[in-house]
Image (cartoon, rainbow, N blue to C red):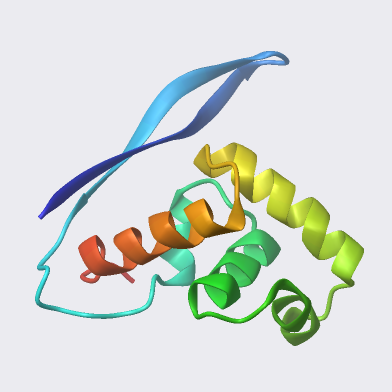
Length: 109
């Protein structure tokens, strides 16, 4: 299975980013949660990746925030950043994308 996901590229100047995409090739019969390294490769910080992983596992935002030791307000700020980086507009859309990454990118760390 092949999946191409647009993501923010390397920042060239203060206001310009180079275009980038993550290309995933995986075995659809192999199941695994999206790893932190895979989420980090999408441009997420460590905290954003851990928060996203918690949401993908079905935990509510408050519980995911508590499990990584951040406040609910900080989690909301991280979530907005994750939305921007993954080009989604809602938690439902984010979880859908993460589940697809989990399915397609199962061969990645």
